[in-house]
Length: 258
Image (tube, rainbow, N blue to C red; front, side):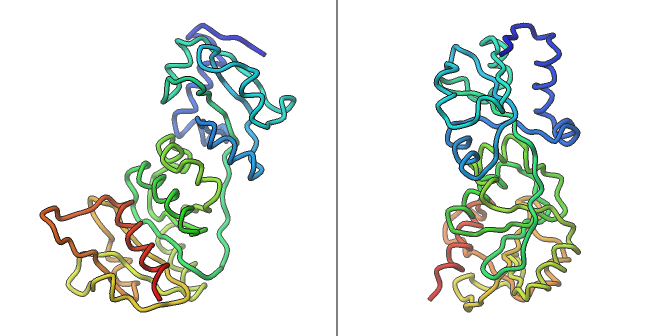
């Protein structure tokens, strides 16, 4: 095990560089914090390549009890100053795990799918993946977006759901072809005159719930491709909801109709 306390150390600079998307893509690695997330990853067969920690927050004995193979994981002890510059949370028990990236492959299956077009906020994607996991939704398509699945805000807000929900990044055309091949009804959440109250939706075996970015909504592509357009009536003074909250309302209704 190596101990590092210099900000100019090459190994530390490499680790810090993984906070940037281009370096994650180049190295095929990403950073993750949190014991809950680590234990979930291990249960699902995802093993870390490296764990960085500081003895100011956690001991080597403590995190060796998490269940990973100590012969397969590189351990890197950092000074508190170095660790604090990398970690989102400077709290007892925290550590940073380095995992290999992965590319989920979607399958043609029934049930509800989520399609998110033009996503702008990594935190929203993470929250939606967490909601999908809670509702039993297994697959998500992110279309026409620059969001990185392994962005720290996605990982933090998903609470490990990046390991349980398949999330693929497609163009709009690729997403449409996939949905049509699975004979899905495409339901677009849209503020248009033709949109109806979401509570009036009929039951359907396979639905793709398509939602756009908070700032712009859906493009004409999905408005034209949709089989139905729905809206959430706003009964108070506020005229909009957070994207992840809107998704949770609509998805819950779709899954729990009689």
